[in-house]
Image (cartoon, rainbow, N blue to C red; front, side):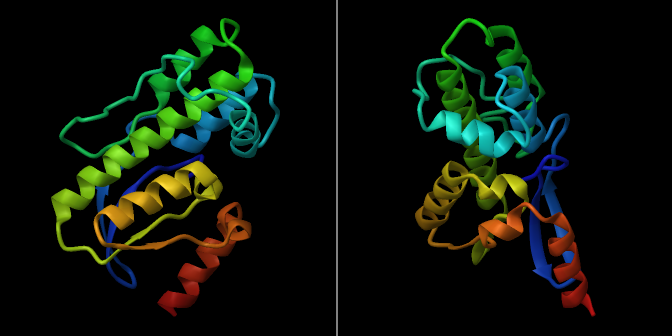
Length: 175
């Protein structure tokens, strides 16, 4: 879950992955950045939106949950981003941030839940990428893992924002 990608991968071993779902338009991190810009919160958007969301009401602003409940577990955040652009001046900034963040969490949980059911035999749920630093995302995906009896694994926060470190570690594993 990052600014560039949002994917669900089944890891069968080092270097053996099967992509179950991907972003069909905008990634979650990109939507966080755009929302932060629209709300005047600064960059990077993820931490800025998360901080503002702590002061807001996640139920105050009606925002869409793209692809929620659809049979394929793909992700789409362009419509959510557009919805925030349309209402940016109509609600309290912190309420928009909280409602936006909750919409992203709802989509991530729904899509991941669908993928877990499609695959069936998994032992862990691993989250990585910049958006994996978001406490609400971590908590919701951790709860989903618990619900399915899966181990939940997330990198330390300081590694979530450093894609170079993640790529280097993948290289170490393959070597």
